[in-house]
Image (tube, rainbow, N blue to C red; front, side):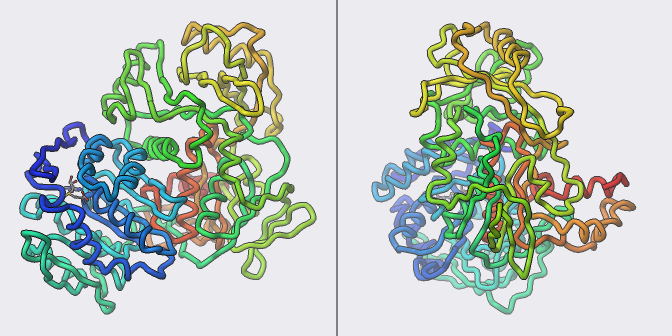
Length: 639
Ligand code: SAM
């Protein structure tokens, strides 16, 4: 966990920021921008090394002020590169957006890029933060944490390394065997590297990992620096060459080159994944029925259930929230007033919220502690219809009921009404209908949870200001161009109805429940004539409240292959999960679709596109569609 004491203070040596902790400069006192160009970009042979590549991955130790990233981003755009750039950078002591701005002030050449980065700067929360620039042409994966631990959570094939980080003599804790093992694991047979240092042990460690290391002149006052290329003959002996500590059943599928995808379901999950794939040039078709859907909700508030623990579910919820707050496709869908206040009248809950605020210590750009809770300035409420429209723009959308999904002659066949559509991949993202479309699925456990929301006139008096969550919630005014401005009060969570998946009807009882939760927690009560309507819908949930997101197994083969886990759940050597090639699932988001779908869609798109994953690999088993099947095998319960 990044601690408050990990936060860094800057002083200045001439034009260069200095870390007081390490007593070293972030970039050269002579000219940081020139240093980046010379040491790192020239060092890896840019721009030639990335021209004509569909995808290029750079990984860096020590994001610092982000100068290396910004100059690379600028050069990537100006070189007219056709593909996508992913820049992965680890950072143990993240600066704040304010300090980044200060550190970039001396470089007007990168002003516009700096502005983009600072507006999307995440809080100092351990884990991976994906930031998307230029419609996905450039992606930044910021990994906050200690370098080697942070890289151990990364799945990527790195084309070039920027080995920055303070000088080895001043920061020996970073330049460890663990780090070189991670460099080994993440490199391929022609990976290059560049570093400002010429330290002998760095040279030897890289040579031991198969790099042909060359000493070349350094920048400014530095006499020498190292550059190099991996030798094609090198065979790793690294202890961490095996992917991760994840169980074998949660293995990452072998990538295929594919160009077409059918996405079933046009709610927030389907729309996010369709947009992601469209942005990388996939031929995407969205197919959805005209049935009512959870994403038709009148407003969606991003109200994260932060937890004090570092359990996977807590890490996942936090990562999704941070991602959604900076998701570019939400830009014009936010209610006018940004920020969500979380508060409570219960003493124990108040203490819990305060402990979370203390533990996170994200700074006032992201989390402001208050007497009875906290305020999240970057959060807000969305107008779902506006967000969906933007996500679906320009994407082929067929309104049909899908009755069958079948793999025939190396292609997926999707029967939609009387038409058979074909594609390399299918993503099933249709909430409670999802398991009906996945033939023979074992252990998928989708549970319908009805919920109701009240829609009130935005001008209703005596209501709390802005977005406010208190167990229930009230949203700020949604400025909807096609209707009167309104606010919503939500929401009920009912027990699974007897009639299973039937779409629920709004009831007076649920309306009273929503209004009394509001009144108990905020003292507010809208007049009856200010209530415009009630909305009721069905959410798809799972037993552990984590969505099913990932590649879909060949259920029958998988059950056979992993049946020995019944005797010993830690048994290894059973091999990787057999998957149905090109079939993916995204469902079970409950009431958190608008919060969780953007990051999950990026994860699925990354699997399909074989690009670095935007989530920590240790989260994969907790999202995996086979997790309940494996649990049943281990417990010996029937599938
Ligand atoms: N590349 C940076 C830039 O463009 O501004 C400069 C990097 S600065 C010289 C070194 C960075 O490495 C600092 O931000 C520091 O906090 C980070 N760092 C130091 N030790 C680390 C560790 N063990 N793990 C991750 N980051 C570390």
